[in-house]
Length: 118
Length: 160
Image (cartoon, one colour):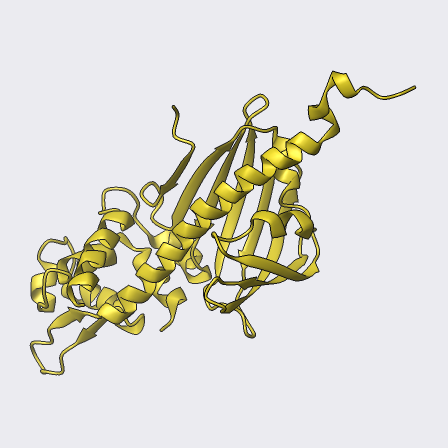
């Protein structure tokens, strides 16, 4: 899957709202368009972006093409975000500990008791 | 006690913003980013080790390194520094390519002096296409990424 395309698709609030709706179950374009002040073609455009990003799939029936969410792609994003969160929390915990070591070693921190010899 | 660490996905739909405070002066926090010898001591989640093969700490310079995961897997990484303003700011991007991990995103690290202490803001923006879409985008009122992700997370879990 393409995470770049997924994040790009998720950057839009309308598309996130569409996904949130689809998380409740598959539905038609008509149904999806209802809560938005938006034409059907505009909604279709958003659906195409989501489809290209692999976040949703659409049925093949000519008129009624139900949209459904693609759990695998979402799992990919979820995993990636989880790694990002772990990087943030754990790296910067480690940085915090390491900075204390560095500070203890730095000449400034050793302070006046260890003043320079003349 | 004040919150020392937070990760915010709400205030900007294109970005993840992390804020962290350290009880040491700004110069020292900045210095920890400037040398692979320092970076090896803290970069990566618990259990990860980092080996650097190339390190050019200047705008346009490349940091090439491998993160060795606790599961034995190696993660190839390539970072390009876009902006370096000691001791205030570092802008870099994970730019993908070759055998490198596939996500491209840009990261801005801002160091604020709090009088002997330091606030570090770590802001990630996804990816180049997102930047392009930015002008035609609406902000605010829509449901935040984090809420959506929580619901999607539940959904994914329910799928087993």
